[in-house]
Image 1 (cartoon, rainbow, N blue to C red):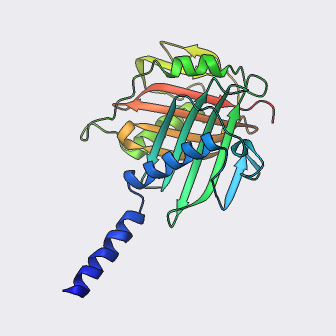
Image 2 (image 1 turned 90 degrees about the vertical axis):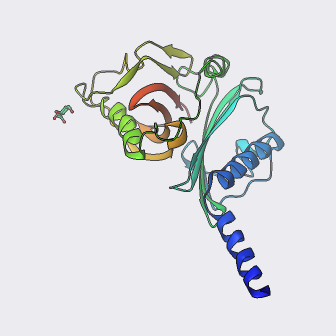
Image 3 (image 1 turned 135 degrees about the vertical axis):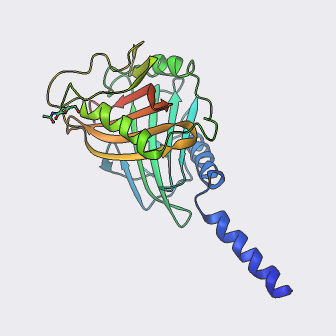
Length: 246
Ligand SMILES: *[C@@H]1O[C@H](CO)[C@@H](O)[C@H](O)[C@H]1NC(C)=O
C-alpha cells in the first residue's frame, strides 16, 4: 500500500512536468512577472533580434511596464509564444517571444522587440490600441482547426510574397495589424508583388485559439514575427512585428 502511494505520487510529479496547458501557462505567467521585475529568467540559449544575446544584458535586464499580454500554448512542440504590449514603457515597445522547453526548463528563448525607432512602421501605442479591440475567444472543441490547417494558412500567406497566385483563405472582414498600419476588411491587401522569401520559419501553434506565430527572416533578412488567427479554416487576424534596424 505504501509502495503504491509512492508510485502514484511519482506519476503525478511526472505528469505535472509534461507540457500541459497548465504547465505552459505557468511558464508564461513566470515570464510576465520576470519582465515586470527585470530579472529572474534563465535559458540555455537566448537570442534578441535574432542575435545571440544574454538575459542579463538585453531588454530582460530592466523592468518593463507591461500592458496587454497574450500567450499561445503549444502542448505538442512544448513551446509558448507571448505578445507583450508595453505602450506605457519608456520607450514604448511591442515584445514578442518564442520559448521552447525541455524537461520543464527553458531550452531556447527568442525575443524580438520594436520601438518607434527600430521597428518597421512601428508605433507601439497604436498597435496596442488595435490589439485591445480584437475578439479572440477560445474555439470550442469540435470546431477547432488542425495544426496542419492552421500552419498552412501561415505558409500560404508567406508564400504569397513570392507568388501572387497562392490563395489565402480569409474571413470577411479579416484584419492585419502591422506596426502602426491597420488593414481591413481584406488583411491580405497590399502584399508587395515580387519574389520575397520568408525564410527560417519556426512556429508555435495553439489549436485551442486557432493561432500560429512564426518567427522568420522577412525577405530573407529582417527579424520578423507574424501571428495568424484562423477561424473555420479562414484567416481572421494577422499581427506583424518587424525589426527594421537591429
Ligand atoms: C504559384 O502558385 C500557384 C497556386 O498555388 C501554383 O499553381 C503555381 O505553380 C505557383 N508558381 C510557382 C512559380 O511556384
